[in-house]
Image (tube, rainbow, N blue to C red; front, side, top):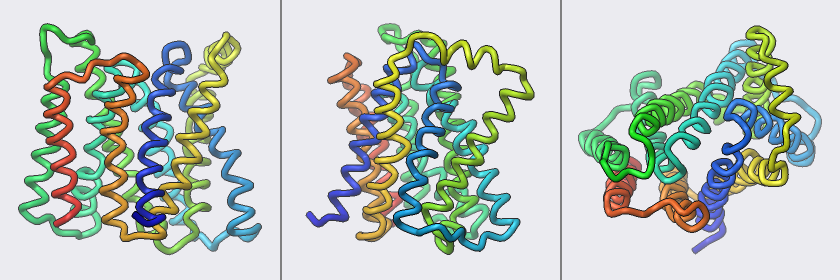
Length: 293
């Protein structure tokens, strides 16, 4: 195993650990405030990294590119991440992790619609396998440890979040390929944080947000999770994509679902049922099929 494969697997593991810690943090800090802190923390950490790697010069983004990057951050970070954290709180880490397997299929489908990329029959089969796996682990059961209504709402939030994440990535795909990756990521986060601050002002929620931040919170856990999820996992992901083929890196990154299910059992006490294992197998199999063809 080379460094590229190691970085890709490490990014999946680090993100999975961040998801587990966000699950714990979400027990006391609402999803919106948690997302706001996470993104602002990542925004600050990326600044010295960009200065070290790219220097002070700002890439020559056009006005259209800047608009796309900011809108991508608005829907893919401000809204999508908040919904993802809501799903995490509602139905647990393992179910949310498996629902997040829809990311790659959504990216492929949206790329086919907006970027002219063609879907082959095997990719449709992979998409159906992923959907089957998601439905299997979220279908209502009498012995479910999570309330059925919470699972239903969590699935809606989770699927919506993953779809918007995919849409945000597809929007800036060409920009990511032609401009500085780190600068593009930083500007996307600026768009996400800026959108959340505008929402707070327009909806007059500043006092509620301030009150939630002023209450006792597990700030050590929140900061560590934000460091892992909004910064460290991103850098490992980037290193993997630079050193090995993108298709190989993507498949290795999808192992985060397995890591999340395992860590949810180990750290949160969530059960690993036969239903979850079968659903996990279907989703991972579907993702591999879609990425290999």
